[in-house]
Image (cartoon, rainbow over all chains, first blue to last red; front, side):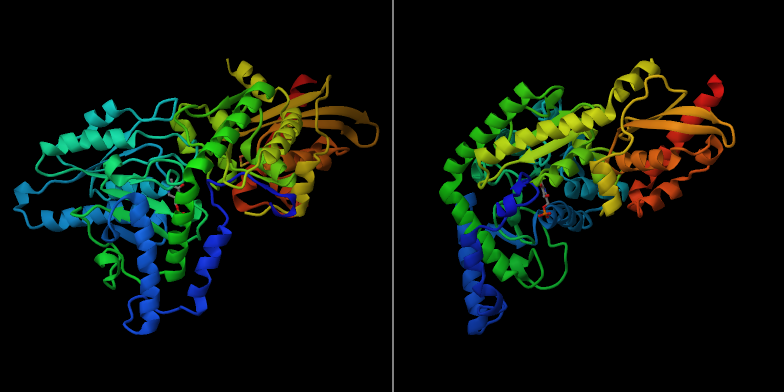
Length: 412
Length: 127
Ligand SMILES: Cc1ncc(COP(=O)(O)O)c(C=O)c1O
Ligand code: FES
């Protein structure tokens, strides 16, 4: 990368692929038409959006009408949850008062904040009953817990495909199968949503095989531009728009289409589809090299989350006797960019809810480092990173001395 | 959130870092739940004119950049001060000497002044 900087934070965002950028550029100033306009300017934009839609439909194995473009996964997740609830309430209001039911939503304790906060708020406003599925030390939910959580009034299940912090993979297609079975016997079908933002680049995204009704993603995690994403909405899913305005996107998402962004997403998907298998293999090998090397050569370190049920690009480690923000900034001073689940870097005083959900002690969560790889990562970069990491750990562990051990021995 | 240059300087090359093997006072504050633990060691000398003076001071810290920088700064500020003077060092003095701290990091400077006071209290108790 540029200026000898090493970027190991691809789960946060990725650079726009050169081919993607080239495809997008004309849609800013030459082909700038509003895709809803009837004249040739509008038609040209609409055609470009149409082609992007086809690329996505091909990739997710659905139809173009099932693709709803949004401003990113945050909006897609909000639309999925609030849109399903809104549609339900519209219908519920028509029923006699004694037949109205408060809907129930099931999610997990370690969703991205845009899902968690949406659900928490709806619960607080007494609009829904909410169940959080636990995750275990491997960072994976148990289907048996889900089965137990389902109630008569369950409306929606929202479970992420790959966790953004620890990279663990959830059994989405198994859940899809289970729900298909359960829904056969139910009059009011349970709707299944997955936030696939971190999964799209590496895992199966055939919505039929997954058995999902709704699926969210963001372009900037797959070498596309920021501020554009998609919600897959299976035909027949009971959902309404949550943002009032125009009738764009099959009346599910009001607002002038971000045509340049959508073109970028369409191209990013096309490029991804071409290289997905090869890249996944290469990145997985780099990940395993890094994990093996660090676990072998660095003392007092643990890998957070399952080793096997894990995204090819994610390595999440906790180091004892160091704090994540310090670690991150020392690495940054050495031109290496990574991420941490420490509270100290986040603006709140609580460490990552994801790591605590795995059962880590607060100091282990504070001492965490997330390294996420991408298609431009090289082995040479990883070798430089490991050498730097060792130096930085030595330095920070010298600064903290035996302080943690002493704290616990005094407490006894 | 941005750190001042002074914070980064103290964080990347902390002053007075380490242990005093026969300290006259030790103060440890903080709590691993919120991510910070700080320990300050002092040596006190009697000066004929000035009274009890902190002649040596060292720290150990487990915490964020701001926690390490404030530890480094407070040990600089307290060195060669009398214990009365040192007790009066506030978190604002530390933050100011570092050319400011991001608002959410103010509690780290709090910790530094608490650790110093705890070390002085420990010295007084022992004497
Ligand atoms: C799992 C997951 N969901 C949702 C988001 C939100 O994506 P965006 O910020 O593009 O809306 C992210 C990205 O941080 C993510 O990793
Ligand atoms: S150690 Fe966490 S904010 Fe300072």
